[in-house]
Image (cartoon, rainbow, N blue to C red; front, top):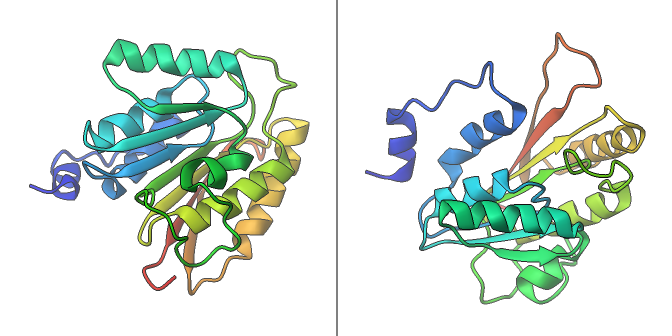
Length: 216
């Protein structure tokens, strides 16, 4: 049985009454298989990193980034507790292309020349570390640069996920810039979906999913 068949047979389809993080995991599960490569660009407390590790299995490879040492420590401790490993970078995700492929990615469409497998899924959970210093938040310019690189690195047929938080000042600026950037992607090369809770505050988080078409 393939991972996609198992996904549907296990009926992991209830995206209601769950956190936005859980909702994202449910939607991404169909695009991850054993042995895949995946990237968590903002590992925080490690929940997305753990999800990716479980999804790609011991045969796969997971990279995770964060600018805060506290987040790297949280993630490492969680993975060790659960019996998983990932390659952790105490670094901004703005250096994604350099650290994953060994060279910066100059454009969006196409595949860069590299030996490492292209990631099937790349995840972003923007904002600040829950329970951490709110002044240490992801920044708009770095996020846009990193997402540009991520789309270049992403496997054809793969998915990039991004959760934006417009509930604080930098988050509003970042969420608006991300929306405009994704809205400008070529529909020939990418399909972009947004998922928001319409009957909640406009400051509620928004989930974006970007599918890289096979023709890109």
